[in-house]
Length: 240
Image (cartoon, rainbow, N blue to C red; front, top):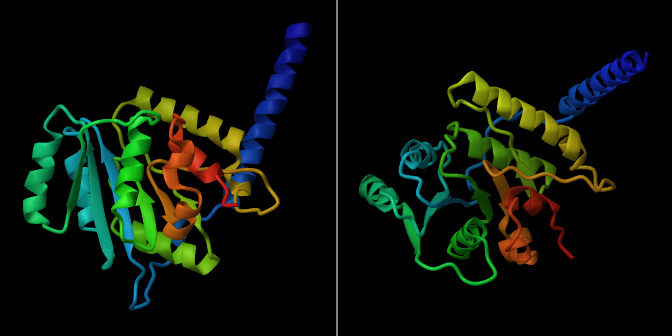
């Protein structure tokens, strides 16, 4: 009898959680439904990509950014103490795209985690009105930035994130991503993050788009220098 009631409770909780996620996701904006920005004077966007031993993945990811359908784009890759062929790959791509900026980090200062420091370093050299933090294995859709900026401006946002679509091969890996994704949705309830009366927050390392003035107001990644989940915590930090 005890097992029966435990099963009933588990079923009830599963249904409740599934309904919560389904209703919540309907309140979130699908970027495919946001038209790309059309104005002539586009705000400058600086894309910042940290790279530590990313030779195997960075070329397709970086090329997708460099061929982005957005005219006013600055691309900065921070080569963070790589010991593989990352630097060689970056220099080869730079010959095709001279506007690509490559920043080198040789030493990690005390009081920092590597990725957080690399992102802060890249942001320190950025000239954009908006900063897009992403990863070295993320392949961008051509209109991702144009749609993101359109949504930011229309809704007067200082920060927005996008969930990514996993394209890695393997059923087990995809099942793992799905399981983790569902857990994060239940834990953070990102559809509530835009509510000024809610304490919910979210950030996604694949696409963290931040207004530069807001980023500077919170001292950038310095405020989360030693936090291992920098992407999510960037969404939590508030300006004072």
